[in-house]
Amino acid sequence: MERIKDKVIVITGASSGIGAATARKLAGLGAKVVLAARRFEQLQALATELGENALGVKTDVSKKADLDNLVVKALERFGKIDVLLNNAGVMPISFFDEGKVEEWERMVDINIKGILYGINAVLPHMLERGSGHILAISSVQGHKTFPGTGVYAGTKFAVRGIMESLREELAGKIKVTTIYPGLVATEFGNDITSARILSTYGDFKNFPSLDANAVADAIIYAISQPGNVTANDIILRPLEQA
Ligand code: NDP
Image 1: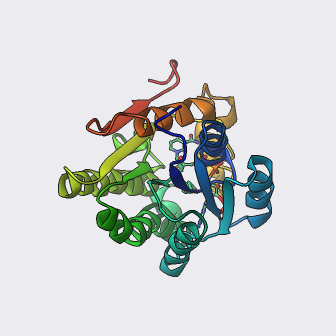
Image 2: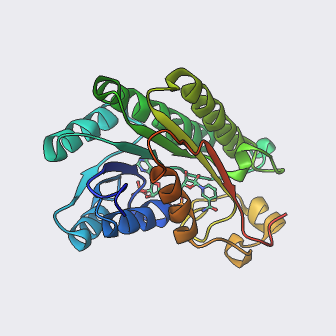
C-alpha cells in the first residue's frame, strides 16, 4: 500500500497480541517497524521473521529513559519516525476491596505513564519534521466501566482524555488517533490474580472476541488515510458484545 510503504512505525507492546499482529501486517505492506516490549526474545524472533526492515528494542514503557532510548534507536536505524503506536498495556483487574494496590500502580505506570513517556519522547522529532501520527490503544473500557475493572477502565478513560487533548493541541500539525477495542483474543488478562474476578466473569477466553488482526486492520485504516484526513476515534467490538 503506497501510503504505508517506507513509513517508519514504532510499536510498543509488539511482543504479542495486537502489537505483533500489527507489526506483521505493516511490514507486509512495506513499512519499517520498530518493535518495543520487555520480552526481548519474542521481539528478536519477530524482528528476524520480518527481516531487515524490522528492529527490536527492549523497552519497559513504565520507564521514561526506555522510551527516550527507543526513539534514539529508531532514529539511528531508520532516520525518521512517521508513526508511534502506543499499544503496550496490562489488565490485572480486581475488586477495590481486595486492595491490590501494587496492581493498580502497575496499570497506572504502564497504561497511562507509558503513553505519556512515548508522546514526550517522539513529539520533538515530529514537530521538527512538521508531520507525524501518534496512536494509542484505549479500550471500550475507555467509554464504560464494569464492576471489578475500575482501575483498568480508569487508565483507559485517562488514555482517551490525554489523546483527545493531544489531538486538540496538535491539530493542523500531527495526526492523533485513539482505538477502542472490545474483547480481543490475545495473551491479555493472563496476569489476573483475583480469584473473585475469575469466578464472577468466568474465563475471558470463552467470550466472543475479535482476532488481533481485526484491530491491526483498524490501525492500518487510520495510518493509511490521505494527508489531510485523520481518523480520530475508532471503536470496534465483536458482534456479540453488548
Ligand atoms: P497482550 O498481552 O498480548 O500484549 C500486551 C503487550 O504489552 C505485550 O507485547 C507486552 O510485552 C506489552 N507490555 C506490557 N507491559 C509492558 C511494559 N511495561 N513495557 C513494554 N511493553 C509492555 O495483549 P493485547 O495485544 O490484547 O493488548 C494490547 C493493548 O490492547 C493493551 O493496551 C490493551 O489494554 C488493549 N486492549 C486489549 C483488549 C483485549 O481484549 N485483548 C481490549 C481492549 C484494549 P512484554 O510483556 O514483552 O513487555
